Structure formats: C-alpha cells, structure tokens
Length: 170
Image (cartoon, rainbow, N blue to C red; front, top):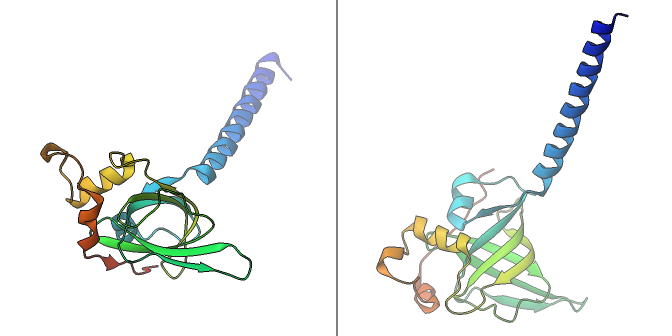
C-alpha cells in the first residue's frame, strides 16, 4: 500500500469516526430536547403521544379536582388554557404551594392517546408580577395580551374565559 493510499484510508476512517460520533450526539440531544407548547399549539399540531414537552398557560377556574388514592399519593386533574383552547392535565404528586386556579403554570409531561396530558412535573408562577416567558408569548400570540397596552391581564380576568377542549387528532 502506497503512502498516499494509506493517508486516504486514515482520512476516511477519521471522517467515519467523526460522522458516527456526531450522529450519536445528535440522537442523544433529540431525545432530551423538550419544547414548550401552548394549548393552541397542541390543538394545531397534535404532537405525537408519548413525546415529552412543556405545556403552559393558565389553570382554568373550576377545573381543579383532587383525589387521594389508596396509595396515599395525591392525584389531581385540571385544565390548562391560553384563552382559545384547553388541555386536560393529570398529575400524581404534591402541587407547588403557589399553584391555584387562574394562575400561570408550566407542566412537563407527555400527551396521551386520549388527548389528555400526563404531567410528571408542575411549576407554578413565583408571584403576581411573574409570568413564564413561554406563557407570556402564548398569550401574545392568542391575542389576549398586548405588551404595548400594559401589564399582563390579572389572573382573575382569566376565570371567565371560554375555551374549547383539545381533541386527539392523531
């Protein structure tokens, strides 16, 4: 084997190794990337069931239901809305102290085949003036808040929003 062909083989093997390492790294990132979606985004795009993402919006008034099962783990269900659409959420665990109806929330979990969202983590907003950036963006897109006209609407004003449930579209 000549010196030139040996160099070509070494370069080809290095390129193959770098390509394989890049493909493995991108594959690992793809499994760990978690996107934010509002209820309107969920209604429009129908994410595949089982894919993890963040769902954010406001907890719809009158939608919170608590149940303590035989295993003494609190189970809760509630609906998250952005003013246009609503997604039913189920969660097993203790909710944050600041969690309440009409307040901003971001949940991490997976969409189920029936169209409900099974949350593994629930995050509530910090105080009256804080709103997660993703929730604020979703409210701007849905037309329920224009930053040029002032602060976000108070949580109490969201209690009267009418919202349509999200159907599983396949």
